[in-house]
Image (cartoon, rainbow, N blue to C red; front, top):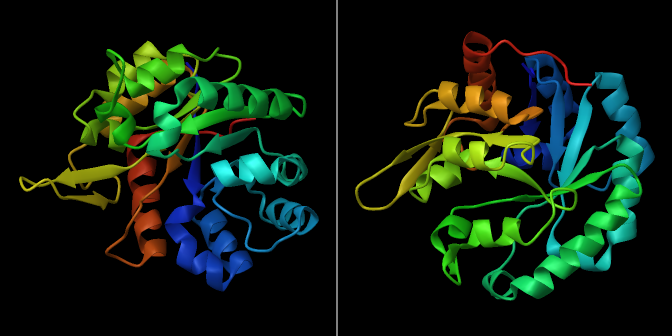
Amino acid sequence: MNKMGIGLQLYTLRNEMNQDVATTLQKVAEMGYEGVEFAGYYNFSPEQLEKLLNNLSLQAIGSHVSMDRLRNHLAEEIAMNVAIGSRYVICPGINQEERQSLPETVAFFNKCSEQFRKHGIAFGFHNHYVEFTEAYGDQIWFDAFFGSMSPENMKSELDVCWVHKAGCDPIAYLEKYAGRVPLLHLKDIRKFADGTYQTLELGRGEMNLPAIMRAAEKAGTRWLIVEQDDCDLPALESVQISMNWLRQNYTFMEVI
């Protein structure tokens, strides 16, 4: 069975990255994370970032790239991700107008995907909970969207926390889209009766993470990517706690 690599979405450490990119990435590598996913490049050139990652033996899993960047800076994003060795570029979300203009959004994403594929990069979409609570026609929006795009042109970076928050089953979605979920955002959550919620370190919330990881392996997922949107503890401490939990609950190896 496929063994998945363990990565970190650097949005979790956005404050630390803003202060000192090199030191932060060194700490991430020392914790045992094998790869990182970017959410911005902190004014580093492609060559500078490539050198830093190589020195730390960190793999660039991919990058979150906004709709604005896709529309107006696509060539720059391609150049950066080719230089650092990314296998994936992920759109981290779209607004309501873009969701409800589905044919136009799909056409735009198809064009982006074709450009990325020329450089060996797969294009994907990262969900939040709204894509599972909002309808398009008689379908859940997420299903209408993925049903409109070919497996070659659109992959899923399934954020299981937001699927769960929306009242859907992450395992069912991993099974439904098996082979199209190379990346998985692994996080934990606690929901409260008043509708509020708290994102937590792995193993400290209500998610059935071991079952989700088993389903991800079966679905062909290649990377489990830790992300914690907001941390009550210092963020570096939080991502260390999540890594400690993974060491106890999942045997992982480097993905090539």
